[in-house]
Length: 145
Image 1 (cartoon, rainbow, N blue to C red):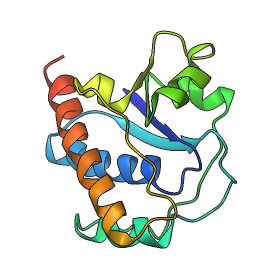
Image 2 (image 1 turned 135 degrees about the horizontal axis):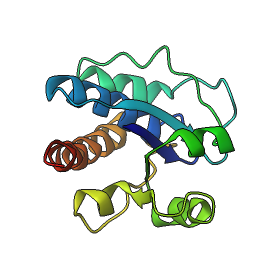
Image 3 (image 1 turned 120 degrees about the vertical axis):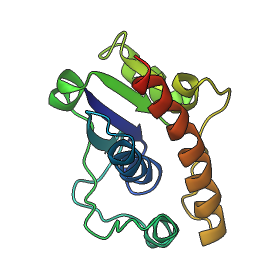
Image 4 (image 1 turned 60 degrees about the vertical axis):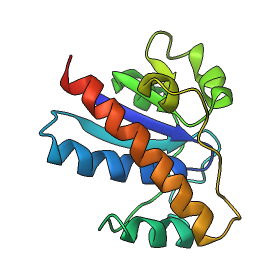
């Protein structure tokens, strides 16, 4: 299964979600391929410093991350697209009908993943924890299907 995580700039939330889910998928032996992208990403941008720091708590190195813009090819090759907010989902629904959900919606939670951009490391760590908790539920759902 090809899973695409989408946020705004692909330097914080979707980058962290993809890295976290990759780690969870390996631990749970899920057969998935994971990518991330941003609706308004600047191709090649690195992950934010705070995201890099927040991921260290999970023994994940985000230094090699490079942002990429969402495009038709990514949408077409994805089986499941998980966005960070309802607004991101609305942008993609037309071109990804039937395979786009908010991360929290797919995990059975009722919220969005708020953007920590511009915040301090604590806000990024809180975002990472929220992502992790939702992603564990996604892994359980995919493992049972």
